[in-house]
Length: 248
Image (cartoon, rainbow, N blue to C red):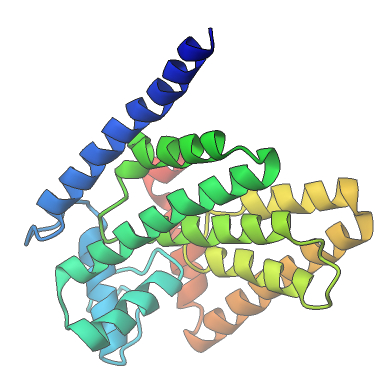
């Protein structure tokens, strides 16, 4: 029986490992493709170049350039920063997303290990994440998804491994989740779950965390909206919400 259990454990790891290797091979084939692989790659790359050149990306699209922002600015700024070092290359954005994809798989493993203390299950969880079809679709395209997910997972890991007794723990964890919001604005369920979990286990800390998170988000939204004469709010919350697939 012990041999059968051992073989079952090996099989448990081999299956997602095979699919993860497939994702790796696919990324090596596609990261240097000169044309866009996803509908969003074009405007994300374009806006990152605009930031690199000191231009505004949240503006009235009535006048040229007729290119919206649609996403909050952290990914644009991160890609622009890498372009300072490596040039305006399309593959830089894909490498950034792939690095965040790998980091996210590692973070998932660490989070699972934190709760179950099982190396087997933590490795399996990381491979399961890495081999997931919906995750692998965004693993090597110029989009903010993987960076945002990596930041969310970092926030979950921080909250799950800390007792949150230091004065900076709650502000730092709330800031991490706010940073994820300003990477992609629809990633709000994770901080909501953390706030509920803290409220049920440590009520006062849950209330403080929720208040800090809301404060960081509202201040950031207000600041960007003011700096862009309302265009930030329009593009992030009004224009993006009218896209059919997002409503669906």
